[in-house]
Image: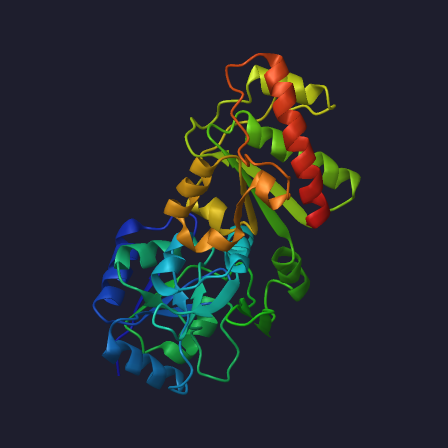
Length: 353
């Protein structure tokens, strides 16, 4: 029988020393009961074979039923999963941290379950442990998952090394599990997030426009497509834009603002953004203004090649030159002509979405 050390932690202001102690025990192969926003779980070092064997024995769980990996940062998903679909990045953006478990193809070709808990204590322990952490619910297989510490320690007293009492779980409902290794996605368990909410996110389309500084061309395309979608009453398409070289927070150029004002579009509050891998990977369609933009995106994320196009190319504009030149620093009539080219292309894109 193991002597279980029990500590009480304020979930809003956790004692760093106690959290660090728990993390060290996990790293060394110990079993630690921790809080999450769904239910209480048992944190274990995924790399420690003996610790995992002990966890299976304690939970009386079949060996062919793997445990979910818990992570503290969204993009750590790429350490464990390969060939990650766009739907996963959309769901991550919307629901992580939170009560959603994603089943994905692992980097080794199998399957892996991943979740990012919306609980500060849990994420701090995972981060400080500096090892991959699995964390199944703190109950015997077949019994209800524990919604509070009293329920968790009832079966785990003397079986785990350390247990943290942080009060009742915020939600008290297990995570929703979605299998993204198949298309369409399959719901394995409906938990704190409904099937309808998950499906609504998966079925949206994300369009990303790319230019150099995100102050002229991509802003025009972004703003004009939004206008068209509003007119069509399309709520299933989300539009954004970014630049490959930009200073975040700068606004649209004066010429861009004036040209769009002629279309009844106000971008005076627009703030430029630099493109990130997260933006790219969650996008269903990425439309660039010039070849140099395409090349930049492919260096960042080669796997998006099949959904990356020049804007005029995707719109099937019959032109020997598929580039849309940068109007920055030019007179207003240059901006107006640039917008006319972008409008023609974006109108065709809106009919293809």
